[in-house]
Length: 440
Image: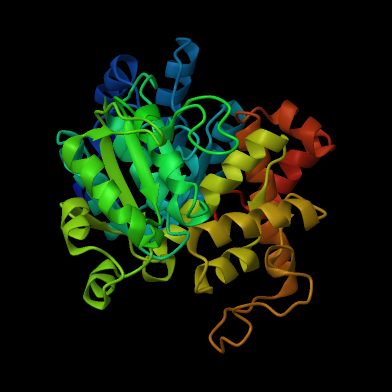
């Protein structure tokens, strides 16, 4: 299910492009041109975010917000759109519990960054989640429900670390909303050749030295659910014909046994290798190739979908923040470095870099050196076009991001946020006004 946004904007020249952009980026958007219509919708529907102009024809945006809060409703985060002359009013709304604001005129990319930040923790981890905001990953996510209606084998290809297993898990969860069906993942390249048959098909007691008891293989373990064979290109030639037979017959014979065990599985295979070239070179059986290549899902590398980098980073930071109880974030310079880096290790490298930063960084706001190493040899250091900014501006941006993350953690409650930051409420308000919260 797409995250739903309530857009409250009376000007069609602004509302139309905003709705189109939100829907293009994977959100469901209900657009209301009066405050009263939006108020009724917010009482009856569940939204992940509300974006509201302050100046509306029938009721001011701040009055709308206060009335809904006074009714004791559970509201989504509110992001207000205001003119420069109404900043004091927007700051007042932050004090009342609004999440953020943006001033006119604004850049649509800046607004979408805020939307992604504010909806990040509102989206439950279900099969309907987007795999990314790039066109390529949205296309894969949109295709998965169609594939879930079929039991045909699926082959997922792509470089190591691009998220092939995550795609397989998303496909599985579409038919397993209750989490009761098995998902069994096996890395074919990590199993010794003399043990792979037993790993796949199981074995009977006494079938070989050390087989002290009977054991089911992954085919039987995955019965009724999904079997994910990762790195299928590493399957030894001696096993390929046995694997083909098991797939065709939907049954396996344990090592040392004679009776077949019927299995009902969804088979998903993955590889970073060119299986067609391996067929031509004789390394991979042609009949097995066509048996597992019924549906092909290529996952592009992260360098070809750069818009996903910061989106993924924010998701990982949110997970790490929840686990460690710290408001992790990226400095402006670090975010630019992440966006410019080619990520040869793809998503796996991105996650590991952020996990390393959580260990090495002295503060929850990660600097570039903590992410890419203390040597200072940054991946984007040779980019002559890399954006430079005065030190004061950079420090202000980092402090503003830190305070905004703390506000998010505390649900916008000023007293609690001030306590988390170790400053007084008055000091926090002074900093927010000085930093122009929401303008950067």
